[in-house]
Image (tube, rainbow, N blue to C red):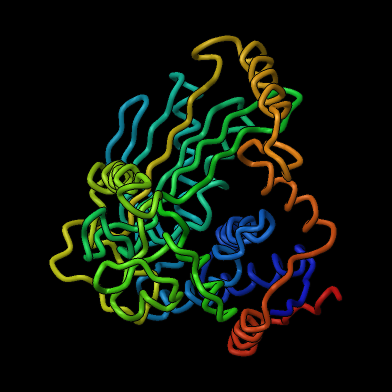
Length: 364
């Protein structure tokens, strides 16, 4: 499907203006836009500006508070539980991560669980905040229940991503940002827009059988845990997703399992919800709390360089380090612009018209 390319700065300004129209402060709107567009820059198109109208719809049904009072409910020198006050996860998450970083500055590590939040964009943005402080960043969140545990036909977990960002010296940082499913739901949405089939191992139908129908979720199907099936290790993906759910929500007081609020605003909220909103979990570890930071980063460089030098299988040019594809894509898109599918562009134009915000001209 053909795309239209826009400059990053223009999309950022437009997105910031939309968030301000929802009532966000200029500071929160700028932060939310930066977090959201970081996904597009890094090539994670499923979690970028294509989701803007989804956030607007959540605001319309009063599930998003544009002016949240993000506050600490409980804390120790190294831990905190934060209430996001139903704010945009794009705003709540970086504020909570900053609390973890501040605690790490004081006592070596910081750990923050969050309740009462919403979808927070890509996990990578928040984890990577720690890199600027010579810290290791950890980020995870639970999400709408679209995933069936191994051997189940019920949707009980979200795609529940994990990101770990580790600083290096001369080499770029190691950034592993991944869903605990074989594929994130956003990638399935892209296939739906392009009217393409899904690979085997991504989803199952309502009976629990493997399918390539990218629309299977609409007919009672479910996403599959990382691994796809028991023989390929889906029980491990299921366990990882469960860990994220427990750390993010059972620990914080957010909703977990089948009670996590759905991202689409038109989907009814679960009944008898045990917690508040969506949950996140953040960690920041000061490298020099373990060993001198320069020594660590020198050894990280050696680790990365050795893996880059690994002999490749036939037909492959190089071995990638987690974070390489996204970093390389960011360099390209900052210069050449961000390509958007036509349905996404039309959706954004309708938002611009509705909120009387100027829509940027394309870059091609």
